[in-house]
Length: 263
Image (cartoon, rainbow, N blue to C red; front, side):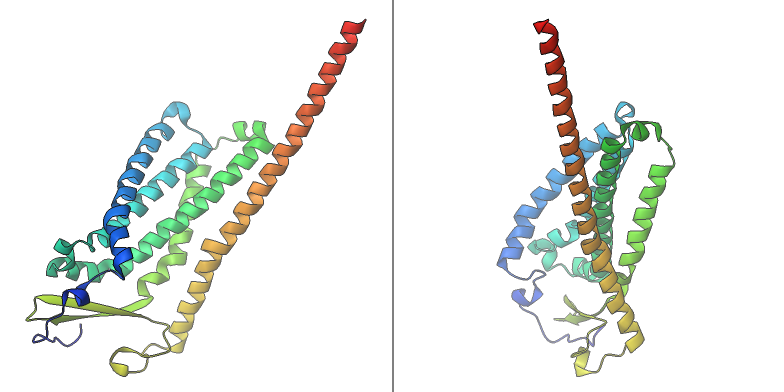
């Protein structure tokens, strides 16, 4: 924690926990509606997807995706509450929020990454079901799907774990310990550090953060986009070929029926 400036009082504007007025109104009015509708909708989805009569490999992936969405939306709540004055200027809330906000960011990105890869798994499963319907029905290993979900959750958690240590935050008390303020800087920052000092972290550690950021971007954005595009392209190709086969089969049946009627 920074050296306390107990004789200095911050203005309400300096105490704000949001960037601008647009962000404030979005988080105060739009995001709560999204959280309520999202949680409610996903809970309803779970009641259907987890029903024994509806249980399938794709539905298990979709149920895991619904759980990930619920967790993601709930993790947004502290940031949403921080825009309301009752929490913005509350010393206790700010103290707790400043201690957990970096970890909230990491957990939120972890859940988001897991959700992205669950979407990839759903697309892959649907492609298999359309391409090889008999294989999809007979391949019912009850441990394979939970294992794959566990692998996705674990791998994305490892990839995003560096974010718990990506920033260094300092806090400072103001106005006779009735106000608290925090500022964070990225560990891999090569510019100005706190108190105009040089970055105390080693080059090796900063390189580790840089590499982790690159890996995260590749595995959370670039690779999933490539895989989803490829899977959807293959799905469209299979459906188009199947449609062509159905048209040929239908035309042949019509031709046979016409020939029989002409006899």
